[in-house]
Image (cartoon, rainbow, N blue to C red; front, top):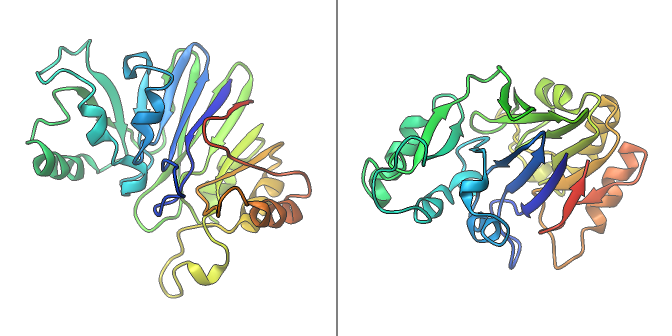
Length: 255
């Protein structure tokens, strides 16, 4: 199994980078996790969307799903047959939000003419080839689910957006690689009590990885000034207890 980083930026993009988007390949399948602004252009450097088994959206914040609008324009401007349409899996309860977006950009059928839209149920594994993707709900400002991908005897976990929570613990458990958000430079940047938190510091990502028995930690969704992510790598390594990597756009990571 392998992971290809198409974009790693948080909602405020790093200069010249796309927002969230990660190709996961294994078990004879290829799945795109998240499709934030800029991801379609990066995807087309490697694959036509027809080469994907599915696009899975972790939550309905713009930096994780807005390039669905762009993806629609890759396809002919007509209603495609069921076999021609790309499978797009949305979070539970989000179909109406996508319909509202469709009406704003191209009409009510903007997405459904090109995509086979569905919602996952929040808990049940999904199978693509021999790859299994299992959702785990995380703690964010809106409903959000991370995913565990398992194929070829390997485990990749993607946190999506989250604060420390039970779902994060489940995702990190015995993962070969944990792709973890690390949005915050300090806790002062997150929501303050009594409001629930929604993101991690690199140190918190390191703690989750260590407590879960994760073998490798790869940080993403973080603000990077130029190529300088030393601050995040150092903070996470202190709590993880081992070397930490920072996701690099266009790089492939073998699991």
